[in-house]
Image (tube, rainbow, N blue to C red; front, top):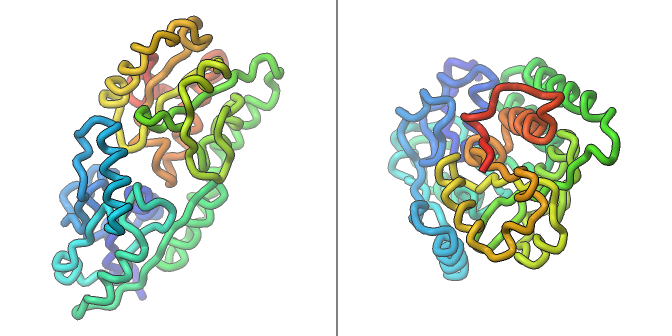
Length: 308
């Protein structure tokens, strides 16, 4: 199939970014309600809707997610009528996390109802950086384009970071708590521990390639990390700052090593850390800049991260 005949619907933000990075931005005809990058995709028809209010407090969102999943419903709905009109050749989705985006099962059910088209479904399941490279290759292969140049460029940036942090002494490797959710407290896992290590830090609480664990406040206090980085799922810089500020009310907050040494940071988790696409390399560079400003100055401060 020639590129000019491609009609791609992306139902997950990271896939939208992968497609655009592969040079196929113009072939995207529909998106999820959360796809917002590159900015041009915001004008495209929206093919999904959420059953919950993302403006609600964190604790309430967490409760609502659990209630919806407990009712055996999906958190997101696929708009079959929109898909029918768009006549996609390919639909890209994920089966990594039912809370992050529409599930593969729901997409398959929706496609089974289509009469105007029979799109090929590509489902991504990234748990590590290597999985992201593999996903880029799979998407490129399915869409008939090359991925080698893009992957080589991304890997080269990762290598630059690793080379610069590999000469740090053990004392210079700060222990880092990456917070993905505040109520309940959860630490970021999957690809995040790997990025922290590459950026010259020692990740705490989470295991590479595994789901994000819940963390008790007592454990955070007892472990007393050198740095705390908020990378809240689905939230930008402003909302992340609001959520993080709520934690400063804890009686033990001021006793934390990271707080005393002014090493608490907020980031735009929605644009970077939560999206397993090309901008995970930007996320690595952000971490490197936060943890080792004496070595790195990429210029992300102020837009992608700030001190709390």
